[in-house]
Amino acid sequence: MIEIIFFIFGAAIGSFLNVLILRFPDFKSILTGRSHCPHCKKILTFFELIPILSFIVLFGRCKNCKKPISWQYPLVEVAAGTLFVLFYSYFGLTPSLFFYLIIVCLSIIVFVFDLKYLEIPEIFAWSLLVVAILVSIFSTDFNLLNFIYGGIISGGVIAAFVWFSKERLMGAGDIKIALAFGLIFGPQKSFLFLFLSFVIGALVGIILIAGKKKGLKSQVAFAPFLFIAALITLLWGSEMINFYLNFAIM
Image (cartoon, rainbow, N blue to C red; front, top):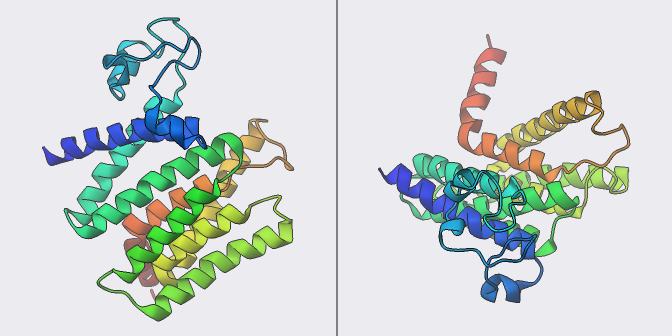
């Protein structure tokens, strides 16, 4: 039952994140403006604001002008709801859950923003870094050396790629994201985190090139790969490392 509550709560938060993504950087309109159709500008009714359900019932179209609603809305809502349930299942009702749900929200914003605009707003990248520092410091198993080494490894490797590629492959925002997760993961999991992000990025790149969606010199948002790798590392990283170590000594 509580998982259903977390999913509904997460989907509702996802709906707000959509508003934030679409209206950024006009924070005044985020706080005071009413939600409306981007095509006909009609103010949305209460029913039209219900996450996921309204999209399904209205067949993905505005009730007034019948123009299609962006798939970003339901996808972000479903993703937020699912991640809220996953993190609740992993952390339980603990103080850590609160901080990690903030990380989830910031990650979704940056994920979508980078995917759409190939840009990471500084305020969200810095916010993610600050929350990551707080999560690490207040963790029950906090280790200062692991904290430092993890940040150096993750942030340093991405910074090197940014410098060598002259920001053609990645940008300064990617450094902050990698640094943030490196501080949380420590050195061992940071290697896994980086490995997964490059593997996922390479696989997606190959698929896009094969499908002629991108060329060899095309820019591709890298932050989404970092977030997917971070999610895998956070939830299943220990098991993956143990499996590798057991396999390596066989």
